[in-house]
Image (tube, rainbow, N blue to C red):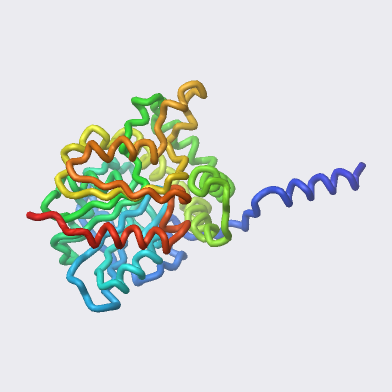
Length: 337
């Protein structure tokens, strides 16, 4: 009986995805290396001073005079854009990649009231400090909501908006996701670890197909939570989830004045917090590809580029295919003043 139990346990361990021991990396990813030098932008916000980390990558080929800004999603960081940034620089673009306040290497102030308006204002200040007058903005996932908010608030600062599997194109609360207050969100964050991050991404982002190179990004996120000051991360992440669930931009798409390109991995299973809705209502909550199909006609000037075999993170899953699509879109004629 003992031998049978040991064999059964071994079979279970073999079937389960391997999770390496989590290495604490600090609440601000102090011990996680980024692919390019990190710079800092300090700015006043909500009665204090916040610090934004960012990478400012110069063209490595003949400069074409254009600047691209890459905005990360909730479960990502500026570092996740490393491959894309290197490719764009090799095509002559200047590339700026910030970590938003509340995320990754940037500040996570206690009690901060996160909003896409606040993040857009801070990003605008960073770009002004960096001398980037007019940019092409690329927003992935939650960064897509921020990109739309930036385009709505600062239409003269942007010539084209590229949305990569963005959230916020549909109002998931209106479609049946129950509102979760900060207490509920904090309780959920207490359960977050490397295993839960990997399981979520495997199911939702990568349609059940995991590769070893994805482990780096799980370790990046989990390393923040596992740090002695991980409570700071958990509180920030709960507050950021509240921001995402309560501040969609679905009703404002018609007001975006700049040309928009939607690059959408069609195997994306993301529908923000749909798993908390009653089973009977989940089919009503649109996933990102469905929301994008409906949203493209609501913008004044928009194109939809479908990536049939990719999921929520095409820039991670297939950099070559994604970057070919991205370069095709950013090379299109810019918006006229």
